[in-house]
Figure 1 (cartoon, rainbow over the protein chains, first blue to last red):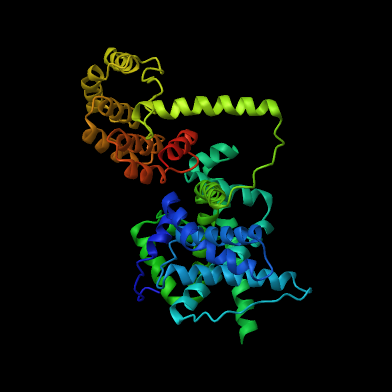
Figure 2: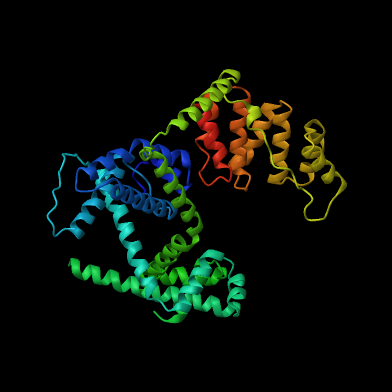
Length: 194
Length: 241
């Protein structure tokens, strides 16, 4: 990823990460109409299209904040393909009632496909992580949530009315539990692949 | 991995280890692939938590903004059809007449004076009223901007707060020192204080004052919908069209 060159459209990504209204507006003006018309032509309506767009924008925001989104292809194609694939997935999930998909000939070149795959992997990992987090005990969830929102562990300890040493240890061990699950999951994945 | 390892991982990431401990740990990482794999997963968990909670407030603001912007882009819902009763024609005629008078009497472009209402300054609310602070506040609130400027300049020298900067900018704008005012607002705009959006709004007003309507509009479009006086922004945008 480090050796690919950054596309000038990276400015859209930065704009999303900074919640820059002008950039968001220009994305809505330039790129969203195409998504909406695609979804409308493929068994969806305006509201469903808006939901897909919003979900993708939030994924991009998260990935940009995690500093792992470096665009190496035009935003237009990347964004459209992400929305399109999300919509097709939703159709697949809901479909026992035969849907018609009008496949248009969009030539997807490799950098765009790679970028899309990367973002989808990011989203998948995030969803998996959310599910793992929900599996943690209540105390663990609370300590981790506070540790990562407040930052100062002294304040977290004060807020929970426990000692600094206790929250520090608890934070490490709760993160450790998540670590274990992440590892088990990746072992499971590689088993499935081989 | 045992508990000690996780505690060590966290200490390493928080940069709490001494130099020698750090070197030992890094050496162990290269020698022990099992430890390295666990550490990589631990780091991933940390990054996920950072995205999930560290940016939660920012993400919520982003989502609100997305919703507001997507609504703007949607076509307006169809107007309801209301049956017109005879007396309504009279009412409509008088409204049209009033509207006509209004239109012919006023310039078709909005003017700076329709929009330059400011909140009063309250620099002294914490009761630590220093004489100069009070003077600046009074001068500003009495619209004696010429007097307020040197007072605010002196205060800013000691204590450069966003609040003082904002009121200083307004005073400059009101005394036609538009370029200086724009410089002050630009600085606020690039910061992150609660005066950020107010500063963008003021930049738009500065353009309006100079009758640069196109530039004014462009600036207005960058104000996020969660700005407290967003209704003013929309009103001015409508007037500009």
